[in-house]
Amino acid sequence: MARFRRPENKGLPSRWVFKHGAYFYRTRLTDRSKWEGKSFFRLGATLPEAYREWADRMESTILVKTINDLLDRYAAEVIPTKKPKTRESNIIGIASLRSVFGELNVSKITPPMIYQYVDKRSVKRPNENGRLVGGRVAALREIEVLSHAYTKAVEWGYVPRHPFKGEVRLKGSKPRDRYVEDWEIIECLSVVPFRKKGSVLAIQSYIRIKLLTGMSQYDLLSLTEADLRSDGIHIQRNKTKDSSGKRTIYGWSEHLKNAVNNAKESRPAESNYLFCNKFGKCYINLETDEAPGWKTMWQNFMKRVMSETKIKEHFTQHDLRAKCASDAKTLEHARALLSHADSRTTRRVYRRKPEHVEPLDSSICETEVNL
Image 1 (cartoon, helix red, strand yellow):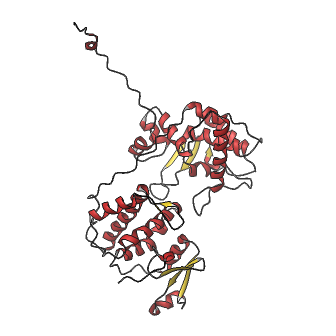
Image 2 (cartoon, rainbow, N blue to C red):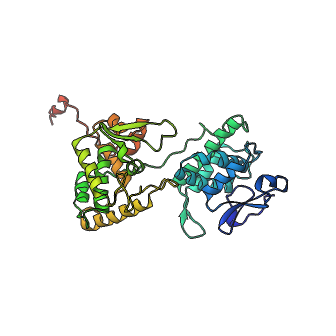
Image 3 (cartoon, rainbow, N blue to C red):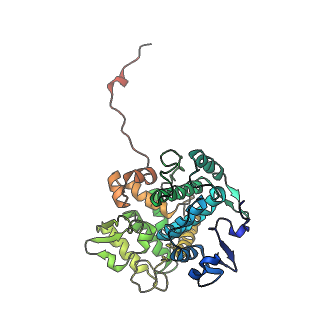
């Protein structure tokens, strides 16, 4: 019979509790020497911090019988190696997976269970705060986590084969198709800044550089003077620096040089970063990979755009990246601009411009019909 868990502890690894604003591990009497002799060992105030501490102290030989056990080891050894945003998403996903599959024997999961899980999770439901949670995108990401956990389970020797890889075909969500027109960019660049330096000019320079290069928010906001070299802008994509290590050089054009110079002139403080806050610091928080200050600036800028220009449909920074890919003359050029390893991603998600097709030149259509 499963042990009752308080609502605040549901989804957490076994023997974890949340109390006094932090996560604790309830140690076993036999292994308290590993936990400084404490019956409740404080792991951390946030889930990522708690998982890192737990991973450092747990032995890799976790006894795995249930999916809960498998997710425990996965959370301890695999999640801490991922990027901050991915870690956070995986941790949330694991909580949902535990609530459904947690007590199931690790060898008993079947493909139909995966389909049933996605169907039920695809329906958004209010949580304890009344906020709608779930949805198909969330469900698919959770199954990705479970699938990877089973890939590791095969590696660790807990199961002889992956129980549902290659046997489950889940239809993904439809990619966003918003294409930003040229006139909308002109409208954005026409917004008059209140100051000679600061947010509006910085964002307008950011828009120009993004349209010319297709760089992601993280890569663009991380640019430093050292990246601006004689032959172009050098970047190593944040998403692949720990895997393929892919590097890209965007060669200088007159438009790109002007956009970079505009960005430099708009900086509110002396800084080594091309884009910086009023203290000269990078907008990216290296702990979370997010840029809350920049996000606020963008939202405020878009409010002005929607109220002061002819633009009536909101667009995102990601839509600008898609415009760059859509406006490239060839798919291969678009793929290279976005530094994608596979052009299929570029085509499916980022090429949003309607395809122009020449009609066939056939004389048979000129044949007269006699009535």
